[in-house]
Length: 365
Ligand SMILES: *Cc1c(COP(=O)(O)O)cnc(C)c1O
Image 1 (spheres, rainbow, N blue to C red):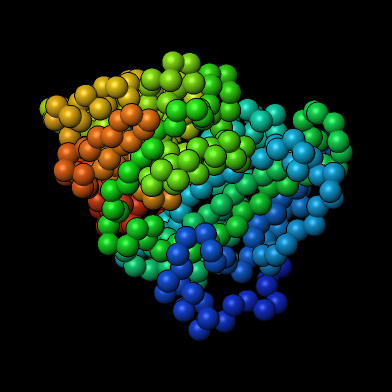
Image 2 (cartoon, protein in one colour; image 1 turned 90 degrees about the vertical axis):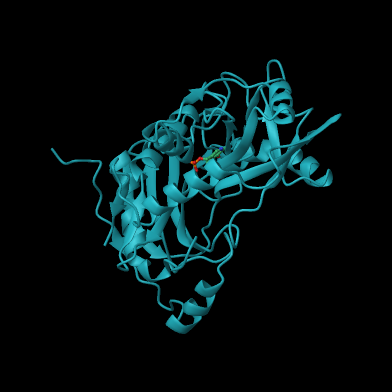
């Protein structure tokens, strides 16, 4: 029988791609999420035809009807992963199968058609190969890949759509922070929570971000960099930031991170750091941690370091935490030793400059 999880891509080359000279100057200082490559992937789904019409085509606007379901009922999910330039000028992806699996799980939570994982992986490989010249070189630089999918059916009515559009776009990114990540100050949201048990907290859906923006705006208004969310039931346990997981490092050398229980996003960076720490013989706990204990332990010195992690910013030291009626500093407020060690170990594996004992790196060319 025909394997319906393998599609042939129809390729339409961009008629006027960015010239090599212009591309070079764009790649010299790409920033984050502002410039895009020449092509994109599009795959369509309909209930009667399944996945079909896989294309790599010139990147550009798409037309949707004003009654397009996603505009009204927000069935939308996405992923974020990076292609890295290797020392020999090849390129690699980091644990892309994990993104494929999470994308399928997000789709299932949002009652969307799950994209077969093989199709997710082939779409990423196709786009990176076509736009390979867009992978920037240099420390901290990468090609950020953004697969996403939304309900594309034209109808008003609350039910799962029967048509979806899956797409991948790519955006060259410089170091998220130049010259090493500076420590961030967190604002503890008092009024807003990110996710409740049974909700969509573990799905990577745009709606989670929409719901977090007002809390993030409050953090900025308070002079902080990022918001940290507490649990929705007791408002006491640390969950995660708007888009990054969080880790604590103690004076006995152990580390701790909030457990996956459906209310936080199961980060691939989180999982990779847990694995690297266990490999190094570090005692690791996935256990709830109260904000109150975070403050007490930071003040007593029992807590030495804290950091946030995710694909975009990799590892970001947390220097200070504020909230209504409290304000405390972690360590000396700067990046901690173990934080820096884990960050450099992870990035060395991703960039092919350190051994890859877990087979996390997939070479593309
Ligand atoms: C994507 C994301 C993360 C980090 O996941 P990674 O797989 O490490 O990039 C953490 N929290 C939220 C809310 C996210 O959307």
